[in-house]
Image (cartoon, rainbow, N blue to C red; front, side):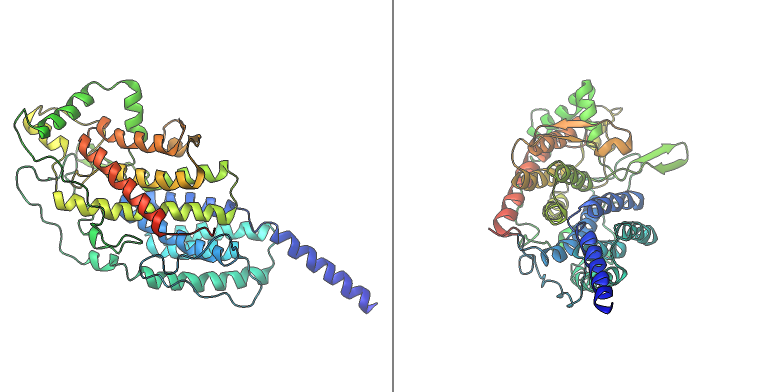
Length: 436
Protein backbone atom coordinates (compact mmCIF):
# COMPACT_ATOMS: atom_id res chain seq x y z
CA UNK A 1 0.00 0.00 0.00
CA UNK A 2 2.83 2.42 0.88
CA UNK A 3 4.58 1.65 -2.41
CA UNK A 4 1.34 2.20 -4.35
CA UNK A 5 0.68 5.53 -2.56
CA UNK A 6 4.24 6.67 -3.28
CA UNK A 7 3.80 5.88 -6.98
CA UNK A 8 0.53 7.85 -7.14
CA UNK A 9 2.11 10.91 -5.49
CA UNK A 10 5.17 10.58 -7.72
CA UNK A 11 3.05 10.40 -10.88
CA UNK A 12 0.99 13.45 -9.84
CA UNK A 13 4.20 15.36 -9.10
CA UNK A 14 5.70 14.46 -12.48
CA UNK A 15 2.47 15.49 -14.20
CA UNK A 16 2.42 18.89 -12.45
CA UNK A 17 6.07 19.49 -13.31
CA UNK A 18 5.45 18.53 -16.91
CA UNK A 19 2.49 20.87 -17.15
CA UNK A 20 4.24 24.05 -16.01
CA UNK A 21 7.42 23.27 -17.93
CA UNK A 22 5.43 23.21 -21.15
CA UNK A 23 4.90 26.95 -20.72
CA UNK A 24 8.53 27.89 -20.14
CA UNK A 25 9.08 28.85 -23.80
CA UNK A 26 5.83 30.82 -24.10
CA UNK A 27 6.81 34.45 -24.85
CA UNK A 28 3.43 35.87 -23.77
CA UNK A 29 4.68 37.26 -20.42
CA UNK A 30 7.52 39.09 -22.14
CA UNK A 31 5.33 40.56 -24.89
CA UNK A 32 2.80 41.67 -22.30
CA UNK A 33 5.60 43.24 -20.27
CA UNK A 34 6.90 45.30 -23.18
CA UNK A 35 3.44 46.70 -23.95
CA UNK A 36 2.64 47.41 -20.30
CA UNK A 37 5.98 49.16 -19.75
CA UNK A 38 5.52 51.18 -22.93
CA UNK A 39 2.14 52.37 -21.65
CA UNK A 40 3.70 53.42 -18.34
CA UNK A 41 6.48 55.32 -20.11
CA UNK A 42 3.88 57.16 -22.21
CA UNK A 43 1.86 58.00 -19.11
CA UNK A 44 4.94 59.25 -17.24
CA UNK A 45 5.96 61.37 -20.27
CA UNK A 46 9.61 60.32 -20.41
CA UNK A 47 11.80 61.83 -23.12
CA UNK A 48 13.01 59.52 -25.92
CA UNK A 49 16.54 59.11 -24.47
CA UNK A 50 15.25 58.36 -20.96
CA UNK A 51 12.64 55.96 -22.34
CA UNK A 52 15.40 54.06 -24.13
CA UNK A 53 17.26 53.72 -20.83
CA UNK A 54 14.25 52.19 -19.07
CA UNK A 55 13.61 49.68 -21.83
CA UNK A 56 17.18 48.52 -22.28
CA UNK A 57 18.03 47.81 -18.65
CA UNK A 58 14.77 45.94 -18.03
CA UNK A 59 15.37 43.81 -21.11
CA UNK A 60 19.00 43.08 -20.27
CA UNK A 61 17.94 41.75 -16.85
CA UNK A 62 15.41 39.38 -18.46
CA UNK A 63 17.79 38.29 -21.21
CA UNK A 64 20.64 37.46 -18.84
CA UNK A 65 18.41 35.08 -16.88
CA UNK A 66 17.14 33.42 -20.04
CA UNK A 67 20.71 32.80 -21.18
CA UNK A 68 21.27 30.67 -18.07
CA UNK A 69 18.79 28.10 -19.38
CA UNK A 70 19.66 28.13 -23.09
CA UNK A 71 22.99 27.37 -24.71
CA UNK A 72 21.92 28.89 -28.03
CA UNK A 73 22.63 32.34 -26.65
CA UNK A 74 25.38 33.81 -24.52
CA UNK A 75 25.68 36.41 -21.80
CA UNK A 76 26.48 40.07 -22.38
CA UNK A 77 28.99 39.86 -19.54
CA UNK A 78 32.22 41.52 -20.67
CA UNK A 79 30.55 42.73 -23.88
CA UNK A 80 28.70 45.72 -22.46
CA UNK A 81 30.70 48.47 -20.80
CA UNK A 82 31.36 47.68 -17.12
CA UNK A 83 28.85 44.83 -17.08
CA UNK A 84 30.09 41.89 -15.01
CA UNK A 85 27.12 39.57 -15.43
CA UNK A 86 24.51 38.32 -12.97
CA UNK A 87 24.58 35.93 -9.99
CA UNK A 88 24.20 32.20 -10.56
CA UNK A 89 20.91 30.55 -9.69
CA UNK A 90 20.69 28.47 -6.52
CA UNK A 91 20.35 24.71 -6.90
CA UNK A 92 16.62 24.97 -6.48
CA UNK A 93 13.86 24.31 -8.95
CA UNK A 94 13.09 27.60 -10.70
CA UNK A 95 11.28 28.90 -13.74
CA UNK A 96 13.71 30.92 -15.85
CA UNK A 97 10.74 32.49 -17.60
CA UNK A 98 9.17 33.68 -14.36
CA UNK A 99 12.50 34.81 -12.92
CA UNK A 100 13.27 36.77 -16.09
CA UNK A 101 9.86 38.43 -16.11
CA UNK A 102 10.17 39.29 -12.41
CA UNK A 103 13.65 40.79 -12.89
CA UNK A 104 12.38 42.79 -15.88
CA UNK A 105 9.73 44.45 -13.74
CA UNK A 106 11.91 44.96 -10.69
CA UNK A 107 14.35 46.94 -12.84
CA UNK A 108 11.58 48.80 -14.68
CA UNK A 109 9.81 49.67 -11.42
CA UNK A 110 12.92 51.42 -10.13
CA UNK A 111 13.27 53.52 -13.30
CA UNK A 112 9.73 54.83 -13.81
CA UNK A 113 7.65 57.28 -11.79
CA UNK A 114 4.52 55.10 -11.69
CA UNK A 115 6.10 52.35 -9.64
CA UNK A 116 2.76 51.18 -8.26
CA UNK A 117 1.39 50.75 -11.78
CA UNK A 118 4.52 48.76 -12.63
CA UNK A 119 3.94 46.58 -9.58
CA UNK A 120 0.32 46.04 -10.62
CA UNK A 121 1.50 44.99 -14.08
CA UNK A 122 3.95 42.54 -12.55
CA UNK A 123 1.28 41.03 -10.30
CA UNK A 124 -1.07 40.65 -13.25
CA UNK A 125 1.56 38.77 -15.21
CA UNK A 126 2.51 36.64 -12.20
CA UNK A 127 -1.11 35.53 -12.13
CA UNK A 128 -0.57 34.10 -15.63
CA UNK A 129 2.03 31.74 -14.17
CA UNK A 130 -0.35 30.71 -11.39
CA UNK A 131 -3.09 29.98 -13.91
CA UNK A 132 -0.67 27.88 -15.94
CA UNK A 133 -0.12 25.66 -12.91
CA UNK A 134 3.32 26.76 -11.73
CA UNK A 135 3.89 25.24 -8.26
CA UNK A 136 4.12 27.71 -5.37
CA UNK A 137 7.66 26.58 -4.51
CA UNK A 138 8.80 27.19 -8.09
CA UNK A 139 7.14 30.61 -8.10
CA UNK A 140 8.81 31.62 -4.85
CA UNK A 141 12.22 30.27 -5.86
CA UNK A 142 11.97 32.12 -9.16
CA UNK A 143 10.98 35.38 -7.50
CA UNK A 144 13.93 35.13 -5.11
CA UNK A 145 16.33 34.59 -8.00
CA UNK A 146 14.72 37.32 -10.13
CA UNK A 147 15.11 39.77 -7.24
CA UNK A 148 18.75 38.80 -6.78
CA UNK A 149 19.42 39.42 -10.48
CA UNK A 150 17.53 42.73 -10.59
CA UNK A 151 19.47 43.98 -7.54
CA UNK A 152 22.70 43.09 -9.32
CA UNK A 153 21.67 44.78 -12.57
CA UNK A 154 20.47 47.89 -10.75
CA UNK A 155 23.87 48.31 -9.10
CA UNK A 156 25.35 48.43 -12.60
CA UNK A 157 22.59 50.79 -13.76
CA UNK A 158 23.38 53.19 -10.90
CA UNK A 159 26.88 53.68 -12.30
CA UNK A 160 25.77 55.00 -15.72
CA UNK A 161 25.92 58.70 -14.68
CA UNK A 162 22.17 59.26 -14.99
CA UNK A 163 21.79 60.37 -11.37
CA UNK A 164 24.76 62.68 -11.72
CA UNK A 165 23.25 64.41 -14.76
CA UNK A 166 20.09 65.15 -12.75
CA UNK A 167 22.17 67.38 -10.50
CA UNK A 168 23.86 69.46 -13.21
CA UNK A 169 23.07 73.11 -13.72
CA UNK A 170 20.08 73.98 -15.90
CA UNK A 171 21.03 74.36 -19.57
CA UNK A 172 21.69 77.96 -20.62
CA UNK A 173 20.64 78.98 -24.12
CA UNK A 174 23.46 80.49 -26.18
CA UNK A 175 21.83 83.44 -27.93
CA UNK A 176 23.54 83.53 -31.28
CA UNK A 177 22.23 83.53 -34.84
CA UNK A 178 21.89 80.01 -36.11
CA UNK A 179 21.68 78.47 -32.64
CA UNK A 180 18.75 76.52 -31.27
CA UNK A 181 16.09 78.43 -29.38
CA UNK A 182 12.92 77.13 -27.69
CA UNK A 183 9.92 76.93 -30.02
CA UNK A 184 6.17 77.44 -29.74
CA UNK A 185 3.70 76.69 -28.36
CA UNK A 186 5.33 75.88 -25.02
CA UNK A 187 8.85 77.29 -25.48
CA UNK A 188 9.98 74.37 -23.34
CA UNK A 189 13.44 74.05 -21.81
CA UNK A 190 16.10 71.96 -23.53
CA UNK A 191 15.63 68.21 -23.03
CA UNK A 192 18.58 66.13 -21.75
CA UNK A 193 21.42 68.53 -22.65
CA UNK A 194 23.89 66.31 -20.75
CA UNK A 195 22.91 62.96 -22.25
CA UNK A 196 26.37 62.67 -23.80
CA UNK A 197 27.64 62.01 -20.28
CA UNK A 198 25.58 58.82 -19.93
CA UNK A 199 27.65 55.62 -20.16
CA UNK A 200 27.19 53.96 -23.57
CA UNK A 201 26.57 50.22 -23.66
CA UNK A 202 28.94 49.23 -26.46
CA UNK A 203 30.28 52.43 -27.99
CA UNK A 204 33.65 53.55 -26.69
CA UNK A 205 32.60 57.19 -26.33
CA UNK A 206 29.53 59.31 -27.04
CA UNK A 207 31.25 60.95 -30.02
CA UNK A 208 32.56 57.74 -31.61
CA UNK A 209 30.13 58.11 -34.52
CA UNK A 210 30.15 61.88 -34.73
CA UNK A 211 28.47 62.86 -38.02
CA UNK A 212 29.85 65.39 -40.47
CA UNK A 213 28.84 68.94 -39.45
CA UNK A 214 25.66 70.47 -40.85
CA UNK A 215 25.82 73.22 -43.50
CA UNK A 216 26.86 76.60 -42.05
CA UNK A 217 24.02 78.86 -41.01
CA UNK A 218 23.27 81.59 -43.52
CA UNK A 219 20.50 83.99 -44.49
CA UNK A 220 21.88 84.20 -48.01
CA UNK A 221 19.19 82.92 -50.37
CA UNK A 222 21.87 81.28 -52.49
CA UNK A 223 23.34 79.33 -49.57
CA UNK A 224 22.92 75.61 -48.90
CA UNK A 225 21.37 76.32 -45.52
CA UNK A 226 18.71 78.60 -46.97
CA UNK A 227 17.91 76.06 -49.68
CA UNK A 228 17.41 73.37 -47.03
CA UNK A 229 15.14 75.64 -44.99
CA UNK A 230 13.15 76.60 -48.07
CA UNK A 231 12.72 72.91 -48.92
CA UNK A 232 11.15 72.32 -45.51
CA UNK A 233 8.88 75.34 -46.02
CA UNK A 234 7.70 74.38 -49.50
CA UNK A 235 7.32 70.70 -48.62
CA UNK A 236 5.10 71.56 -45.66
CA UNK A 237 2.90 73.80 -47.80
CA UNK A 238 2.44 71.17 -50.52
CA UNK A 239 2.06 67.86 -48.72
CA UNK A 240 -0.07 65.21 -50.38
CA UNK A 241 -2.27 62.82 -48.39
CA UNK A 242 0.33 60.04 -48.21
CA UNK A 243 3.05 62.38 -46.98
CA UNK A 244 0.71 63.77 -44.32
CA UNK A 245 -0.13 60.24 -43.17
CA UNK A 246 3.57 59.39 -42.93
CA UNK A 247 4.32 62.50 -40.88
CA UNK A 248 1.54 61.73 -38.41
CA UNK A 249 2.30 58.01 -38.16
CA UNK A 250 5.93 58.58 -37.13
CA UNK A 251 5.34 61.68 -34.98
CA UNK A 252 6.29 59.82 -31.77
CA UNK A 253 6.43 63.04 -29.76
CA UNK A 254 5.91 62.47 -26.00
CA UNK A 255 5.99 66.26 -25.52
CA UNK A 256 2.97 67.27 -27.65
CA UNK A 257 1.47 70.32 -25.96
CA UNK A 258 -2.09 71.51 -26.55
CA UNK A 259 -2.77 75.19 -25.95
CA UNK A 260 -6.33 76.42 -25.52
CA UNK A 261 -6.40 80.00 -24.30
CA UNK A 262 -4.66 80.00 -20.92
CA UNK A 263 -5.00 76.23 -20.54
CA UNK A 264 -2.15 73.89 -21.51
CA UNK A 265 -2.42 70.12 -21.52
CA UNK A 266 -0.40 67.27 -22.99
CA UNK A 267 -1.40 64.66 -25.52
CA UNK A 268 0.62 61.61 -24.55
CA UNK A 269 2.32 59.73 -27.38
CA UNK A 270 4.75 56.85 -27.81
CA UNK A 271 8.49 57.60 -28.23
CA UNK A 272 10.53 56.63 -31.33
CA UNK A 273 12.34 53.88 -29.44
CA UNK A 274 9.11 52.43 -28.07
CA UNK A 275 7.70 52.35 -31.59
CA UNK A 276 10.62 50.18 -32.72
CA UNK A 277 10.28 47.93 -29.69
CA UNK A 278 6.67 47.42 -30.72
CA UNK A 279 7.84 46.53 -34.24
CA UNK A 280 10.25 44.03 -32.68
CA UNK A 281 7.33 42.37 -30.92
CA UNK A 282 5.34 42.23 -34.15
CA UNK A 283 8.26 40.51 -35.89
CA UNK A 284 8.76 38.04 -33.03
CA UNK A 285 5.12 36.99 -33.20
CA UNK A 286 5.21 36.61 -36.98
CA UNK A 287 8.24 34.32 -36.69
CA UNK A 288 6.74 32.47 -33.72
CA UNK A 289 9.79 33.22 -31.58
CA UNK A 290 9.85 31.62 -28.12
CA UNK A 291 10.71 33.49 -24.89
CA UNK A 292 14.50 33.46 -25.18
CA UNK A 293 14.45 34.23 -28.91
CA UNK A 294 12.09 37.15 -28.29
CA UNK A 295 14.23 38.35 -25.39
CA UNK A 296 17.26 38.27 -27.69
CA UNK A 297 15.44 40.35 -30.32
CA UNK A 298 14.09 42.90 -27.84
CA UNK A 299 17.41 43.28 -26.04
CA UNK A 300 19.44 43.63 -29.25
CA UNK A 301 17.10 46.32 -30.54
CA UNK A 302 17.01 48.17 -27.21
CA UNK A 303 20.81 48.21 -27.03
CA UNK A 304 21.02 49.77 -30.50
CA UNK A 305 18.42 52.42 -29.68
CA UNK A 306 20.06 53.32 -26.36
CA UNK A 307 23.49 53.99 -27.83
CA UNK A 308 21.91 55.67 -30.86
CA UNK A 309 20.32 58.30 -28.61
CA UNK A 310 23.60 58.91 -26.78
CA UNK A 311 25.39 59.39 -30.09
CA UNK A 312 22.64 61.59 -31.50
CA UNK A 313 22.26 63.78 -28.41
CA UNK A 314 26.04 64.24 -28.25
CA UNK A 315 25.91 65.96 -31.64
CA UNK A 316 22.69 67.86 -30.97
CA UNK A 317 24.22 69.96 -28.20
CA UNK A 318 27.55 70.31 -29.99
CA UNK A 319 26.17 71.75 -33.25
CA UNK A 320 23.27 73.42 -31.36
CA UNK A 321 21.46 73.91 -34.68
CA UNK A 322 18.46 76.13 -35.25
CA UNK A 323 15.08 74.49 -35.93
CA UNK A 324 13.25 75.11 -39.24
CA UNK A 325 10.32 76.75 -37.46
CA UNK A 326 12.55 79.40 -35.91
CA UNK A 327 14.35 80.25 -39.13
CA UNK A 328 11.33 80.14 -41.44
CA UNK A 329 9.23 82.35 -39.17
CA UNK A 330 12.02 84.92 -39.00
CA UNK A 331 13.20 84.87 -42.62
CA UNK A 332 10.64 83.31 -44.96
CA UNK A 333 7.07 83.30 -43.61
CA UNK A 334 6.17 84.51 -40.13
CA UNK A 335 2.84 82.65 -40.23
CA UNK A 336 4.19 79.23 -41.27
CA UNK A 337 3.74 76.33 -38.88
CA UNK A 338 5.14 72.80 -39.18
CA UNK A 339 2.71 69.88 -39.43
CA UNK A 340 4.35 68.31 -36.37
CA UNK A 341 5.08 70.16 -33.17
CA UNK A 342 8.78 71.01 -32.92
CA UNK A 343 10.36 69.04 -30.04
CA UNK A 344 12.39 70.94 -27.41
CA UNK A 345 16.01 70.27 -28.35
CA UNK A 346 18.46 71.23 -31.12
CA UNK A 347 17.80 70.13 -34.69
CA UNK A 348 20.89 68.26 -35.86
CA UNK A 349 20.85 65.31 -36.42
CA UNK A 350 17.38 63.78 -36.58
CA UNK A 351 16.90 61.51 -33.57
CA UNK A 352 14.29 59.39 -35.33
CA UNK A 353 16.65 58.91 -38.28
CA UNK A 354 19.54 57.78 -36.09
CA UNK A 355 17.50 55.51 -33.80
CA UNK A 356 15.26 54.07 -36.52
CA UNK A 357 18.14 53.25 -38.84
CA UNK A 358 20.16 51.55 -36.11
CA UNK A 359 17.12 49.56 -34.91
CA UNK A 360 16.19 48.54 -38.45
CA UNK A 361 19.75 47.38 -39.12
CA UNK A 362 19.70 45.11 -36.06
CA UNK A 363 16.24 43.75 -36.85
CA UNK A 364 17.27 43.00 -40.43
CA UNK A 365 20.20 40.98 -39.13
CA UNK A 366 17.84 38.99 -36.90
CA UNK A 367 14.84 38.52 -39.20
CA UNK A 368 16.34 39.03 -42.66
CA UNK A 369 15.80 41.37 -45.61
CA UNK A 370 12.37 41.91 -47.15
CA UNK A 371 10.57 41.04 -43.93
CA UNK A 372 6.94 42.04 -44.47
CA UNK A 373 4.90 43.21 -41.50
CA UNK A 374 1.82 45.22 -40.58
CA UNK A 375 2.67 47.93 -38.07
CA UNK A 376 -0.28 48.49 -35.74
CA UNK A 377 1.76 50.38 -33.11
CA UNK A 378 -0.13 53.65 -33.53
CA UNK A 379 -3.65 52.19 -33.45
CA UNK A 380 -3.83 53.00 -29.72
CA UNK A 381 -3.18 56.63 -30.65
CA UNK A 382 -5.91 56.87 -33.27
CA UNK A 383 -3.85 56.13 -36.38
CA UNK A 384 -4.36 53.30 -38.90
CA UNK A 385 -2.10 50.31 -39.55
CA UNK A 386 0.72 50.77 -42.07
CA UNK A 387 2.28 47.91 -43.99
CA UNK A 388 5.99 47.59 -44.78
CA UNK A 389 8.04 45.25 -46.95
CA UNK A 390 11.16 45.54 -44.81
CA UNK A 391 12.57 47.16 -41.68
CA UNK A 392 14.71 49.34 -43.92
CA UNK A 393 11.64 50.69 -45.68
CA UNK A 394 10.04 51.51 -42.33
CA UNK A 395 13.22 53.27 -41.13
CA UNK A 396 13.46 55.34 -44.30
CA UNK A 397 9.83 56.35 -43.94
CA UNK A 398 10.37 57.27 -40.28
CA UNK A 399 13.34 59.40 -41.32
CA UNK A 400 11.68 61.31 -44.16
CA UNK A 401 8.65 61.91 -41.94
CA UNK A 402 10.72 64.58 -40.20
CA UNK A 403 10.97 66.60 -43.43
CA UNK A 404 7.25 66.16 -44.14
CA UNK A 405 6.50 67.15 -40.56
CA UNK A 406 8.55 70.33 -40.87
CA UNK A 407 10.88 69.69 -37.93
CA UNK A 408 14.15 68.72 -39.68
CA UNK A 409 16.23 69.77 -42.66
CA UNK A 410 17.33 67.10 -45.12
CA UNK A 411 21.01 66.90 -43.95
CA UNK A 412 19.83 66.01 -40.41
CA UNK A 413 17.88 63.12 -41.92
CA UNK A 414 20.46 61.80 -44.36
CA UNK A 415 23.46 62.18 -42.05
CA UNK A 416 21.39 60.78 -39.21
CA UNK A 417 20.76 57.66 -41.29
CA UNK A 418 24.49 57.27 -41.94
CA UNK A 419 25.16 57.69 -38.23
CA UNK A 420 22.49 55.15 -37.29
CA UNK A 421 23.76 52.55 -39.74
CA UNK A 422 27.32 52.97 -38.45
CA UNK A 423 26.08 52.35 -34.90
CA UNK A 424 24.20 49.23 -36.01
CA UNK A 425 27.18 47.87 -37.90
CA UNK A 426 29.46 48.41 -34.92
CA UNK A 427 27.03 46.68 -32.59
CA UNK A 428 26.91 43.59 -34.83
CA UNK A 429 30.71 43.59 -35.01
CA UNK A 430 31.27 43.98 -31.28
CA UNK A 431 28.40 42.18 -29.51
CA UNK A 432 27.88 38.44 -29.97
CA UNK A 433 24.69 37.18 -28.39
CA UNK A 434 24.04 34.06 -30.44
CA UNK A 435 26.47 31.16 -30.28
CA UNK A 436 27.66 29.81 -33.60
